[in-house]
Length: 321
Image (cartoon, rainbow, N blue to C red; front, side, top):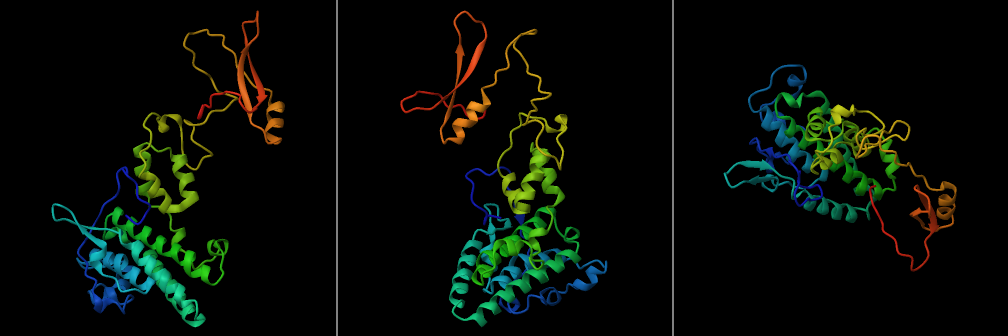
């Protein structure tokens, strides 16, 4: 899943083993018939019959290599999407997917001079995505591969679909809003796998934050977010965080029931509030409000004053109070 924006030190990236499925030039013109040529009866599997021993590797090659070829209408070299580690183990990689997408984009730009050719290319892309989605919905992939392997297929399909709207639909003037509401673009709506959500929660992510992240960017953003190491300073389970919810209970406080902790029991410290009317007036006028703690002579209590920033005024900026 290396086609996603790179991180210097990703946290627990998922590695997808290559199962050994073959994709060669003879398979290039028959995306739909690929399983049949390799002895896998998709209709029988859909009806609940167990598939042969090579079903998992056939499904992986069909989607990891064949879907790219069918959607982008480019000859795929399987070796471009397989890497070998120092121990000789082979893994799926999408590091070169960007090169394929750029080549497809250039071909698409060239096709814009011919409306018929442009519509034909766009139609083939949509056909490949729609057909692959129908297979995804009818076959229990998890019966023949691990959750991580199925996730890589889902992320790949969503990336190809995103390319369709970013390049193909843009060429005919369809907006992003129209794409979101169009039923033919369906990979975007495939829900995130349960294992990915649970993995993030177990790693220390708040269930509410996980849910909010998914709602904003679906599975691709959720997996990418998981590559950032979460803080382990908060116990979200004990705080009662859950999804869906309005926010993380550990990272947000309520002014109504917030109970501060003091250095000494019985501390009688103040709650200070600035003059909100004055503060808002400064902001609405385009100024910058400066807060300052002031102790009046002869008084024990502090006062929180609000002044407008003027050139030359020194202040300290404090972030994330």
